[in-house]
Amino acid sequence: MAARAYWQGQIRLALVSIPVEVFAATKSGAKIAFRQIHEPSGEPIRYEKVAEGVGPVDKDDIISGYEISKGNFVLLEDREIEAVKIESKKTLELVQFVGADEIDPLYFEKPYYVAPADDLAEEAFVVLREALRKAGKVGLGQLSIRGSEKLVALKPCGKGLLLETLRYSDEVRKGQSFFSEVSGEQPRGDLLDLASTLIEQRSAPFEPAEFHDRYVDALRKLIDKKAKSKSKKAILEDADEPVPRSGSNVIDLMAALKKSVGDTGAKAAATAKKAPAKKPVRKRA
Image 1 (tube, rainbow, N blue to C red):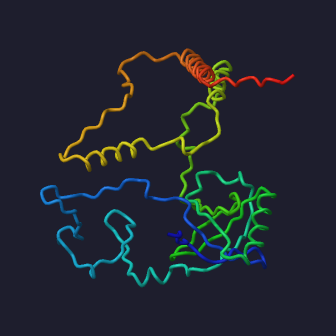
Image 2: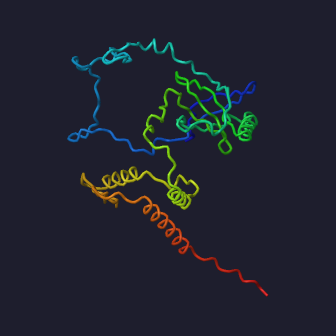
Image 3: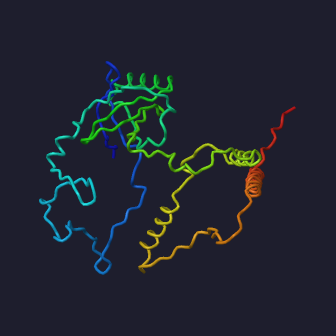
């Protein structure tokens, strides 16, 4: 089944409008969600709307409230909230361009793929994509959708474009308050050299498929095992994980770094030995 577009409209750059379709770049199906079940009957648990001191209440008697102080709410009706919603627009206007590395990763929220809506839009789409790539810039704009307005960044992504929603400044905590007690002094040179060597030894191209959520994998294994089992219980083998001993002596940082560098180097050498040697090419006389 073809993917459903999250948004359809046009990207506007000055007087140029490019019809596009925006698709979610991530999927939620990879995660495992649970429902609460009443074990004796096997029926799922449902929740009632209740008010303290009143009990269950009718749906028509519920309105929205914003807590301005402990137990003190400003009450808002649905029509009042609807009145201030931003009208959904079919145009994303690029109002500013910034360097690709100027946006702190903290601000990035969710990615979406952007593709031209039809063949007629492709030429202008490709021009915008390559102009952004050549300039090393990211386009900024605000997208009105579903009653709210999202700050978004647009950048090249292979043959297409990637649109990422951004958090607004008041949604991001400043980190310096958490680091106020951390020393700003430079570490010893020999320790820094060892740590740099360890990083260099373990450096490799990023391959997302090499990483798995081990918790989700274990849950799937448990669910499959219980689904095939006639009994209600299934036991999975515990993963081998070293248990830290309480009260152990503090490990010398220099010794730990040296051992880590040595272990990584030994593993790399062992891997090289296992690789089949290439046969020499014989030349004919």
